[in-house]
Every structure is written in structure tokens, then in C-alpha cells.
Amino acid sequence: MADSADKELSIGIVGAGGIVKQRHMPGLMALPNVRVTAVANSTPASSKAFRDQFAPEAEVFERWEDLTCSPNVDAVWIGATPWLHCDATLLALANGKHVFCQARMARDLSEAGRMWEASIRYPELVTAICPAPQGMAGGELVKKLLAENAIGTPHQIILNSHNDGWLDASKPAHWRQRVDISGLQVLTLGIYIEVLHRWLGDITEVQADGAVVFPQRQGYEVEVPDLLHVLCTFRNGARGSLTFSGVAGHPPGDQLIIYGSNGTLVYDFVNDVVKVGVKGGELKEVAIPDDLRRTWTVERDFVNAIRDPEAPRPRPDFIEGMRYMRVVQAVAVAQDSGEKQRVC
Image (cartoon, one colour):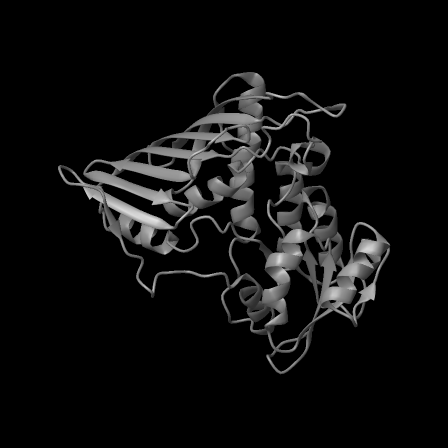
């Protein structure tokens, strides 16, 4: 295995779709002594097209399983949709490969648990999940403001994440609307649970109500909700109201409001703008200091952790993934049962 910046690190790509091409390949290609040596996409033709565009020397595998045991691969980069995350992770780890997994972690809590348990069995291997870009720029500032009691004790959290991506009922079901591919993941629920956990601590109870507005899409019966409302309780006692929609015409931008005992904090996820207002005053923008502003370094962080055992492990890790998957599972149970669920 590569253990220094002077030694080549070989990456095998399982699932080479848009997110890998647009976001991950630029980061990987910018790193010294990192090569993509193998690719297995959904079809041999798409694998060859990816190879020709990004990695001319890469070997094309018809079966992703064979890629995970290739001696020319040090790390497996799983860019496939959630249906493959668990199986590909387990086989890659068993074959001694480091694993980077595209978000969301898995289709359900059971699969996530198997991934986490496997990562524990191979502590020498680096495992990571792609982080949510939402709130990345100003997240450290938000945590600092909350730690300094800038708004007092948080007691109410309101999150709205709405878009119109699923408003056209004539379109076929998106893969995110297919339970067999996406599992229990609904819209941006898992993404924002990851963010809220990082900023406010764990969610411990949920109630949920959702609806499929357009159940038929070109003959496919949709089960994943088009809209979802979640009431939740955080470990610190704060209450949250979280709403998600893929059928909202003219939606406002994604926004988080945190009401505290001495003020209010607002995060505009579209523009990465933080505003704070204290009791009796106006909301004012708080500039994100350069030393707290985070940028996209996902690929570099993963590679550094492989090369240097003393380097920080990339975040989120599989433990953090399990934390948000517990909430995703509890929300699904709460919606089906109509009853409040403990997150466990």
C-alpha cells in the first residue's frame, strides 16, 4: 500500500457517474502520484467512455467485484448509487482496499451497520463517506457561535429544503424515487441530518408525515415521499421542525433558523451566509473568517489519511454515517406507524 507522498496511490472507481466526473475526478487528478487504474461503471461502454476521458491507462472491468480484488488497486472509490454501497464496501475491505463511499451511506440502517462493523474489523484501512457540501463553508463558524452562546441556549430549530425537481409528473421516476436503489433515503433528509448533528448534536426522537403527490410515473409505482415533514427532539432538548419537498414550485432557498434564549442564528445554504441577531437587535451578517472557512478538500483528505497514519481520518466516517442513518430509519418507521420513534 502507498504510505507516502512519493509513492504512487492507485484508485479503482466503482460507479463513474456525474458526481465522480464533475466533483471527484478534478480533485483526484490534481493530487501528485495518484492514478485511476481501474473503472467499473454500469456498462462496459460507459466504463470505456470514462476511461477515454479521464484515465486512459485504466483497466476496464465488466464486474465491479473483480475490480475490488485487483492487485493494481489500493483504494476503491464507490461512486455508485446507494444500492451498491454496502456490498462494494464489504468486498473491498475484505480484499484489503481503502474505501471512499459516495453519500448517502446506505439504503437502510441494516446495511449501514454491516459497513460499520466491517470497518471495525479492518482498522488499518481508511474508510470515509462523502461529506455534505451544504454548510461546509460556514459550518465551523456556526459551531463557534453556538459554543460561545452567541444566541443563548438553542430551543427551536427550523429547516426548510424545498425544490421543484419532481413537480413534473410526466417525467420517469428519478433513481432517488426508487426504493430498490435509494432505500429509505428521502430527498435531502440524510444530508441535513448529517449537518444538524455536526452543529447541534444528535436527534433522539422523531415524528414524521409524508406524501407521494404523484404515485405513478410512466407506469412505475412511487413509494418514496415527494414531501416530508419531520418533528424532532435533540439530545440537548431543542425541538426541530424539518420540511422537505421535491414538488414545491417557486421554492425559497434552503435555510436553517436556530432560535435561542438570547437571539437567533440563520444559515442561508444557497449563499453560505450566516446571520445572527441578539434579543432586541436586528439580524446582521457575520463574515466567515478565513481561518474558519472550509473548502472542498475531500479527495486530498482521503488520500492524505491513507499515506500518513498520523493524519486526521476524513469526515464523516462510518460512525457519523451510522448516526444519521439511525435517524433516517426512525423517520421511515415513524411515517409508516404514525407514532413517535426513539432514535436508536
